Length: 256
Image (cartoon, rainbow, N blue to C red; front, side, top):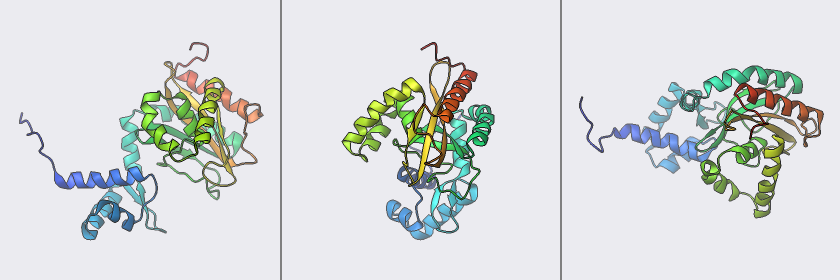
């Protein structure tokens, strides 16, 4: 078997992956001109890369704005890499149940090296702008972001947490730290209009037998119908279904 010499690489592949990395780091849709400015690749070559990635499903280009985001194929690869397919298969029936109960958007998010990302959504009302979609990286101030801050290993989220805290006032960061103590105890998180005005969210953790966070299920909708504390009837329903889903992965809140 031939051993590759150290340092042997395919330059065009490195350039292409650099483009993907650039788009990933920005965490928002980018126009062609944005990507060109960030990468300094010639326009003719950049067009070829973006066109190829779009055709392969690695990137997705919005027809209306021409902006690029990570595509479904790249998300599929990521899901396989973190072995989340079995998790999604198991939680999907519960997501449908929650969707019927709330009549609002239901999201499943999992951890990536860049923060929590939406991997699946059920949306009865496509007319409402929730400020997120499959592939969106969620901020720490969102209900789902709070769940990851509360239950993920501190070392794994340290870089993401520091980056997120730089974007909010120090007093808000301190409030989040205190709030996370309550989230760990009650196993439910709330966020009032974290991304879009009039749209709020409530999120529950999915834990396994090691109390490892597998992901979060989040309900998003107009603020007046989304509960903002654990005493609400719908909150109690979510806490119950969270324990049921986590129980299917061997989690018991009695054994900590």
